[in-house]
Length: 381
Ligand SMILES: Cc1cc2nc3c(=O)[nH]c(=O)nc-3n(C[C@H](O)[C@H](O)[C@H](O)COP(=O)(O)OP(=O)(O)OC[C@H]3O[C@@H](n4cnc5c(N)ncnc54)[C@H](O)[C@@H]3O)c2cc1C
Image (cartoon, rainbow, N blue to C red):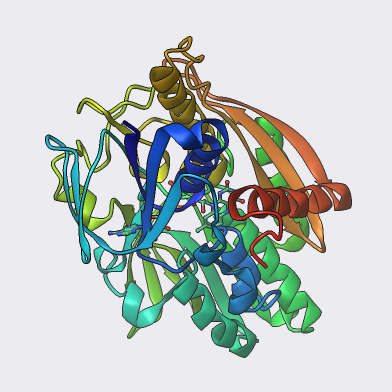
């Protein structure tokens, strides 16, 4: 009898898990991967799309390219998860699992920030990034704010990257002098676990005249008066608002009874939920690492190791080490990097690698290697 493994969500976590299980034990598992979309998009591609560096078509990697032994991909919307029965319902049917892995990521709640939909923009969804392709080129004068509206949020360096790339874009168009850029963040430093990375970013903001507003969230926008209202009730006027919306688990996860305080709690070493035979990886969890693709991928590798060990009756793999790295766009074709480690019960630590053209090439290779591994030798193109 093959083990029925059902993986919910074909993002960073789901794709890595599926790839590892297929490579190691395809003949022993019946693996179903379910996602509502027809294609995958790297989170960082949204920055490329919003500034017109890439077309939306170019950043979508179609799931139809997934041809892996033992794996069947279903493009279906998951409508219910019954964790007691390990049964999943979609718009097209039901799936019973021996092992269930929830990798459904985080959704956005724009309505949680009054005025954001009417008077601002977000760049965290692909639809928001596509809309900004027309909005940003029309901004030539006035005040721009990149603002975080709540925590936690995906990819903590992304707001800093958006501010730096906006500077580049305005400079290239010759309109930077007539524009102000402010960055509103809920932390005292851009990347709290890594003082060196924070210092490099603060220096980059200073050199480029970007106004850094620490320890604040944007609570609301007043579109009529064109002001952002911060969590201390102070106000900042704006002509262009680029927001990071409130994050939450997808509705189907919220309704499943698996969450506590908004996210799925897991054992930080094994990624097991409190339901037997059910794991959760990536942004949908409260494991304590940043909500970023590399961490979802690392967690998926641990879960794959555990499923393989259980099926093959092998040794238990080492626990999740909470280690990951993020690339940081500094503009002008240069990319920095920060390697961080989040171990349960200890303060996180981080190491900074200075921005360079070489790291920009490494980031490209990072994307290309995932495309090749997850989607086959043609990399989904
Ligand atoms: C602007 C920006 C820049 C970023 N830059 C980086 C970076 O440089 N490096 C990095 O590591 N991370 C980066 N990230 C973060 C990264 O994209 C996410 O953290 C990562 O994708 C999380 O992986 P995941 O597997 O948990 O979820 P996801 O990759 O979000 O996958 C979840 C999947 O579940 C599917 N799904 C959800 N609900 C349903 C449903 N009801 N039915 C069916 N399918 C469903 C979705 O369609 C999606 O494909 C960035 C994010 C943003 C927004």
